[in-house]
Length: 157
Image 1 (cartoon, helix red, strand yellow):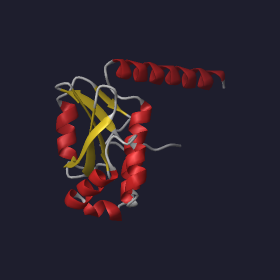
Image 2: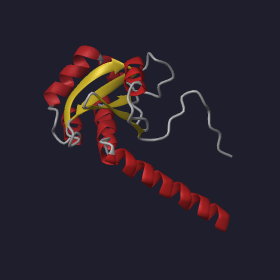
Image 3: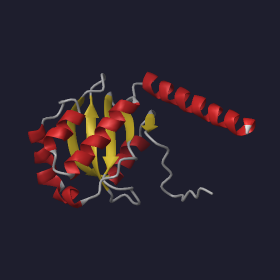
Image 4: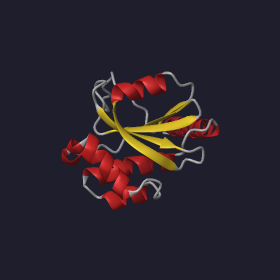
């Protein structure tokens, strides 16, 4: 029992260090990931005001509705996932992407948010997961909100 507790504490400390390291490198904290995922969820329910509030009002409800209505209306028929999100920094811009569903291939749908250095949401647009992979693949600083292994199935016994 002590061994399990020690391993769990070590894993928790490692996760906290990784999170602090990522934030120190200019990548968003957990709250920013949660806000983006909540926005996606509220958009899937056509709750534009709540989606805007989730982003701290950085992007208006009208703009969010315009993006979804013009680029990805099928989001309204999606059971939006609330687990996976990734952020990276590229050419001084912080990007954060949230897929509609678990991205099993490069054709998965996603919303990509642009943030200021203070982690304020400034822009949102629809994209395919391939563009997200290209973005974080070319970046030296990447942070996943939750560990994500797209090519593996994890079984818990």
